[in-house]
Length: 388
Picture (tube, rainbow, N blue to C red):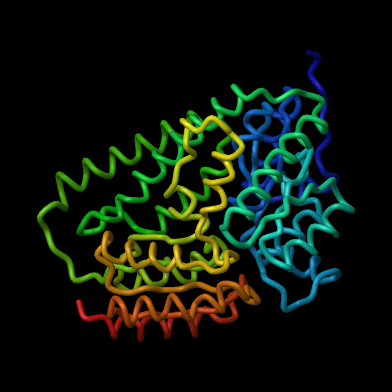
């Protein structure tokens, strides 16, 4: 196949080093014939993208840089993740959106599904209609949506996706889930073997590593390295640093002012019940299921996101994590205008404080630095409430 020359954005020379590197990496992949599918959410079954011979790339954005441009079309009081994601697309400054052949959205929240209408004017955006409950009727509907997504990929790329290709992709993704879960469960060790800041950063960086098997090998290597160091240097020692669980919205855009900050104040973030944490890794796709689409539907519908109603399974899993990770306190991060997490925080607060009897802190924030000082003060006061 003849190598295709792909153009870079007109203002490419003005980009910072990291973004330039991302563009050049994606440019090389595209010039060598890669199919690229951009997506925003863990509800989208990446197994089908791999089965289509394509690369799934994450499009959620975690910086306030493009938000002013997005606010020309979107309300200022909208979720910062939505505004940042749209802003990068609007300004053509995200390499992963720029080089995506197709964008896939999902109806997890009202803000995102309306933003996808605007996004579709920039690049073709296919939206999966996610049911918000887990009964048999919803499961059957979601299976239909997964089949429809498979057919969309076939039609868009002019290919046929075989059942065997889907099964192979399921096996590969299950391995990744197991590898990432073992890495994230290092937080169960006491004392904590690594910072939550490093843990979360590595998980997010993995979504931009396009060789799935290489990504797994690298995380397995890091897991073994951390465990060996803990066995040699930390096992049997004690610490007075409180052990914290972070729950709620994706936290990459606020990692500096919350997770790094609380660890610098003397705590260890040991567990993440978040989209960019262990939540999607908890359950594997059933490889023995004869109906691959039903297997995918069951797995993905069971993700404990706050868009599900009722969502008792998330409450139960948070309670379980508190025990398994020996957690001393819980921080819930709610991004501005994320109504599902904001309302569900009432139930999580009750589980944490009444059922488990440990301190709970709810932080509502956005991607700006305007509240950094206030958050720091609240974190310090929160740590003083923990009996360690």
